[in-house]
Image 1 (tube, rainbow, N blue to C red):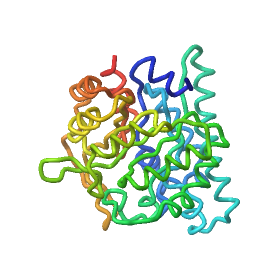
Image 2 (cartoon, rainbow, N blue to C red):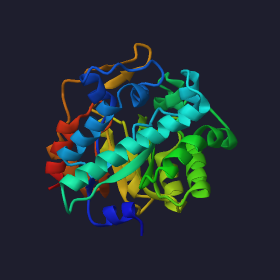
Image 3 (cartoon, rainbow, N blue to C red):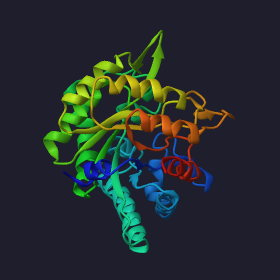
Image 4 (tube, one colour):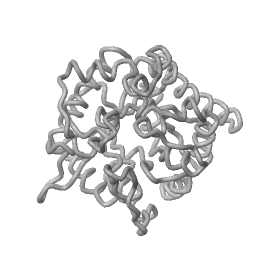
Length: 308
């Protein structure tokens, strides 16, 4: 049993929340295509501060700021290939150092680092991680993801977070790559939507099919959904749990919708009723619960309180 599976076996665990939201609040500009990944070079101290804020709020797993940090995206933005790989390692180091400093200040408490692996759609920077409107071969997916994956593995992250996956084909390719290239566990979380009376991945694949695949994939230690509106979490977890007995993961966004053309989040004033929803998610088998886009350490503290 590895550190991540041990953590989940010990009971429900709190995951962190959005990085870009907090960086923007601190005045860090977002890059048009790299988004928060640009801050690895421009504002590393702010990234460290966000990691620490989530740990102080109750998160026991924090993600590296590498969701949109790929060698292809970084080189497109002007970095040399070696610099791009170095920036991904730097992001992992920032998270690791934040955990080390926090645990030094909080003896007896433990936290882990998850290496964030976003989909090819995030690189496209056109909102297609919410639609799955792209198609690569297994070989092409592997070529796109391999250098980020290897950099995170080299830096010793505890688990790999394969997240916001809109396509089962891409999730399969990345999980296969992880199994071939590392000895680390992964969680896979999908982007899902309603279609008539059923739930499907963003590209139309049945959630049930994705859950059955996760059950059969040894490298997948946990499976679930992320960056969905909170109201989708319960039906998604029910459907996934019907086809796998693996621990479930959920970290919804704030309920706001992403406007890809305007490159902005459309406000939703309702907020998230964490006190009501978190116990429901726990009851459905969720063992890793956090927030995604537009959530903050304040939300993390409410999640932690609701988990008891």
